[in-house]
Length: 256
Image 1 (cartoon, rainbow, N blue to C red):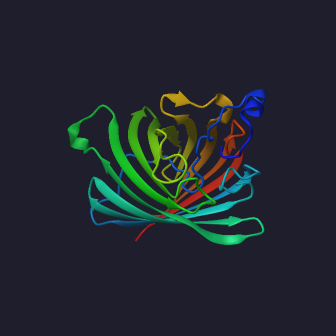
Image 2 (cartoon, rainbow, N blue to C red):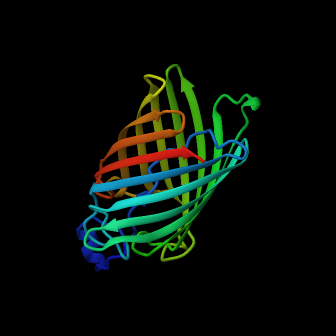
Image 3 (tube, helix red, strand yellow):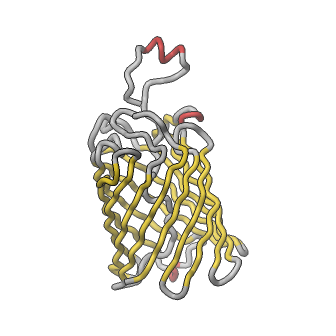
């Protein structure tokens, strides 16, 4: 954190200098193995509301409580195994109204099924530009690995993530490690039930104390409404005070 206290006070409080683990407020999604097909366009809208979040500034980063966050994502399939996406981010903060929050560019690839791997694998790289109220870093690089496996009726997906600040006070620090995971079961052709996990543990090789890490759990449902509209709804509960503690999330996806 960037709030300034004398070192003796920090020791008395049992705190160590350093920032909290970052959390993802705009796109709350576990990336799947599948990518958009060659030449396909997809539009996704992520709309999230933090009912219980942080209530004070963390350096320049605004409190998240009662924020509404929006991410508009446009994806194009370059090949059957490679897609690129662009995002515009916005947020509504209490008493301030809606404002532009940043942008993102993402490239995601997957290993072809014909390789016959025991686990389906993918890889992604994301570059983000953020306003100061939403991130300590104006520019951030994220690398994502994707692992997916079906075990009977359950589909498991795990996305380890590594994030590094390219601007701001933490550029000389290492890579931040986090994990996203999802277990899902289809109950019909139109309904899939899932449990999602989002964690941010801190810098690789120097994880934060447990109370300063982010651990969030989202029971969720995926609905297939006709041939074109897919909807994801979820309610997230945070296990620590380092991140948002109650979040309502939604995602709407349509082909273009």
